[in-house]
Image (tube, rainbow, N blue to C red; front, top):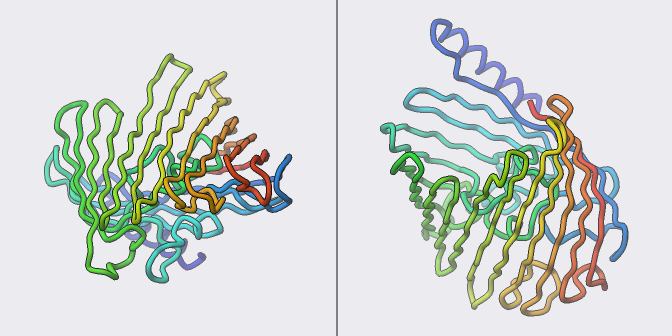
Length: 327
């Protein structure tokens, strides 16, 4: 990590010296996060919800996320590195050994309305993302956890009008983020209108349709929405929906609720019951208290499954307290 940080800082120094008379467009940003998680009832000490991230017991580590970016008028790049347990979970299915690379891509603004991006980029599917600073909830949903995290390929973003956008992509198979081991390719598309997005992914017979959006009900009340259907091999897959109502009570404090219903289609293995057509209803009450660049996130979560998904129990209630620093 010392070598990575030194390399980023050295690159920033060289670019700044070479472009003293130009606007500086190199940036180094990121996050650091850590948390405490414990069960209130259900399962045993180390039983955790069947979703990604924030699944360790007691005081635990998230990750350090370093993002180096150069944004030129026509071309640029992003090098996004993660290190720590959350980072390992985010890239664990990568084919290869570069387990710290979260995103690595270059782009070309062909015109004001067309942008080409090639490399490894986080998925366009779903409401939530890998970075804890970009999510309202600290733990993640089942819908996010069992969709793809990242893709490697070539995508084209088109601005069709002031409120309408289109993205088309050709990519390696899902989770093959460093090279293509099969010779097959996946295809993706996204149609956006006024911050509402319909997403589609096709990958070797499997496909996923996803809707992600949200509305400002008032100046202080926001409602986020996510719904998805995935059909995999042998008619196995999942579907579900989640709502994200959030209220700002002051400039420094917000409170939100994530309610999610998630169903396995066949024995997909997402919930962990080993029973076909299992389902889970998860409710997460989360607060965000901001102190400068630090966000304190207390979270109360209740997962209730149709089968015994939590070491002999159908329900699990847990509490988490996270600290996320952004820079």
